[in-house]
Length: 462
Ligand code: PEP
Ligand code: CO
Image (cartoon, rainbow, N blue to C red):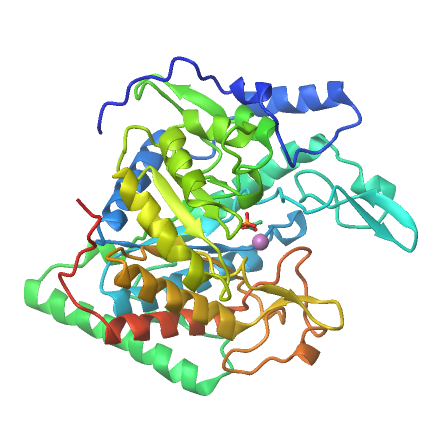
């Protein structure tokens, strides 16, 4: 590990002297204080050596040696903290990673948007329905989606309920992984119960079979078992939005001589809270975790350069991931300038494409949706533009669920606007269902396999 000079003018609370946007307004400050104090005493959900291991992998991804798959719900809900839901979501992420591994021919770093993705930024503080105005829903860590004053009033106790659910989720994920859920020696675990679209099922089965065959071949030739295939690493991430709760789970690790956010491996700064002088950037600058920043069309090249300056002044490998989410309409125009601006700093970042948040639209019927074609189109454009700029796309960031929802339009089964009513469950952004998510991974993998040039490294990978 490189030696990083200690930050002298930073502490987990220094963000409090900055403007903190997107924070709930609690009615009872004493109750809030009590909840934050309880949270500060609870054991961490993750540990610093896992975080350091992830940073090292992200550094490899910056060099083009690994690829990041980050995915999960837009917002987890307390309601959905149950075994089937967690297992299905884990499974689709594993299946996508297998497909990407085969197509990209490099290890996939798996990072879930789960075990703590409970706080949401919103475009307005309030919501009005039929003349009644209430606080907006800000995620299950803050309030409830139901449209009553009781449900919408921010409740500090929910921070503790959220911590508990994050811990239950992570415990189950760790147990599934340790118990062989992801063991490639058992392709039957990799079945596609949900997949109704036959051509997709066949193509996927071919990938699983070919990986199993290569493994058998290797194992019979070498007389050794491929241990790496029995266990995979899984990391967690969430938007580091609710600063009091992030602060409460920030701990000083004596051995590392640094502060870590131990509620998750890889927190990210959302686009709405990435102000250079704002509280979020101040908080994130002092934690040792690898951090992501969402980069949208409203951000300037100078802003990006300042973020690098503040968040990664030592140019530490693996530390900073820029997750661009321009949308199909803006990516061609905006991404090249951003890549050049980052290169001009001489600092390394990992470039990741979030093809979801720039492609949200509202149907004539008032339903928030995203089109599969736009999502795929943005990922394809991202690969192409990075390559043309001598850079490299090092990952994708996807909103998805393991369930058979109908929230996004398109995909192999051709969901249409009229299907959206059938199984639209998200309280916030529309997610790809398992079938659409797997199809996206397969199309990315196919594209990468056809354009694959081994040994080609990005120009800025010095
Ligand atoms: C999100 O990831 O759910 C989100 C709100 O993204 P962004 O900050 O990019 O809008
Ligand atoms: Co979202």
